[in-house]
Figure 1: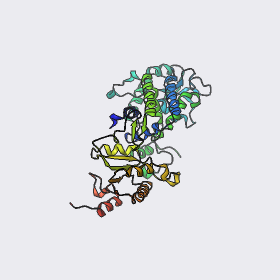
Figure 2: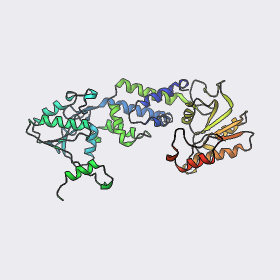
Figure 3: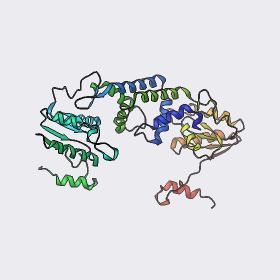
Figure 4: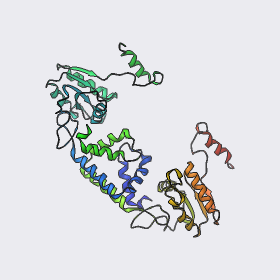
Length: 199
Length: 199
C-alpha cells in the first residue's frame, strides 16, 4: 500500500536511516513530522543544514567547534594545557565537561582501533596526539571506553607514550556512585575490591 | 560549553523535540547528521518537507493518502465496502495491511476519547463514521487499542451503533501466536480460557 503514498514511503525510508531510532517507532516519528507546522519543518531543516556546515573538528584537539570561532579548550587560559584527556569521540568530552570537575584539555581520537572494521592507528588522531605530547604535556589520562576495542586502543597509546617523558593514567574503576553492592556485576565488585583505597 | 558552539547547541535542541528518540541517543544522532554528506542532508530535508505537504488524510476514511491521488482503500474495487475496521491512527492500518488478511475498508478515528487530555467524541471522526454506516455497512470491527481510553472509545462507538442495523465485532483476545503459556500474564491467560473456542 505504501507504493500509493510515495511521499510517506520516502519519509519512512529516510527515517529508517537515522541511527538509534527504534524501527517500531519510525511510524510514530513519521506521524510527528506529518503533523508538524510547515514553518517548523523549515526551521528544523535549516538548523540541520547549518550544523552540518558550521560544526567542524578543531585542528589541534579534534573536539567540535564552530567553523568561524576558535576552539574553546585550546585557547582557554583557565585550563591546564599540560594535562590532556584522551577520549574516543566529542560525546565523551561533553560527559566529562558536565562534571565541572576537569580543567585540563582534551584529545579526541575519532574512534578506536578495530581491525575487523579496518580501522588502524593511522585512521585515528594518534599521530597528532604524539606531536602534542612533545609540547610540554605532563600527564595523559586514557579515557577510552571499557570495550575490547577501547581498552586495546588505550594499551596501544600507552605503548607509544613509553618513550615520552609523560605520566599516563586512566579513569578509576569501581562501584558507581549510589549503587548497591548486591546488585552489581561481579567484575565491577572485583575491581572495586582489588583497587580498594584507604578510607 | 555548548554556548560556544551555537550550531551544535541548536541541533541538539531540535533533535530533543523528536519523540521516541531516547535522550541518551541524541548526541549520537547529532553526530550522524554532522557527518552526513551535505547533499544527503539536502535530500533528507526535501523529503521531510514534501511528505509534510503532500500526505493528507482521506476525507472519507481518514487514512493517509497522497494529496493529488485518490485514497487506495475508498476507491478499491477488490475491497468489501460493507465491512469497516475502526482504528485509532493510520499506523494501525499499516499493521493490519501487513497481515494481507483483511479486505474490508477502514475508518481512522484520529485518536481516542480522553477527558483528561480534553479530547471528547466530537474531536474524533465519530460523526463521519456514523454517516458512513448509513451507506450500506454490514459489519463494524472495533480495533482500538486495549488501553482504558481505547476500550472506552470502543464502548462509546458501540453504544452509538446500537440504533443502526449493523453487526459490531472486536478483535479476538488470547494467546499471541508462538507464545508460551507459562510466561504470559494472567489476564491474557484468563481471556484465552474464558473465550476458548472449539478445536
